[in-house]
Length: 175
Image 1 (cartoon, rainbow, N blue to C red):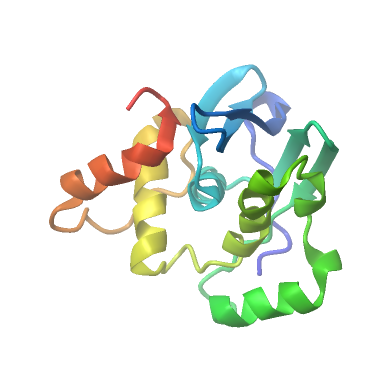
Image 2 (cartoon, rainbow, N blue to C red):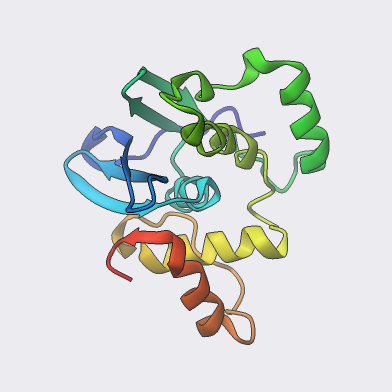
């Protein structure tokens, strides 16, 4: 993992993640750079994909239960990566390695916050098909001036329809 990556947020503004509930009471993660709203979604992989696309490694998560600033160390092409299933077991057996799930104010926040840690171990430079959907969705919705890791492959066949489906979980920008 790249331990030497530095936070590249524009003008040293803090990346923060706050939450609101949708009409079904499901928590929606709301990503900001300073006062600039970037993305709101119910899926943690889209948030982590956005961090990867922006080449950001630091995120402050704020919930009713507290605030924590965590660091993401994304795998780089030269790194040896573990399968996501092994990472999940590692985290389950070592819950102190989770950075954010202790901030869950209720059970419905638990999986979203846990997912931030889990998806940080995805191999984003060579993602699985599902992770690729989240990465492409993040690229589609993020302001282009913030993307530091552009996509290196063309959109797959049927991408427009896939994006429409993925947008069911994106609240901002308007979808």
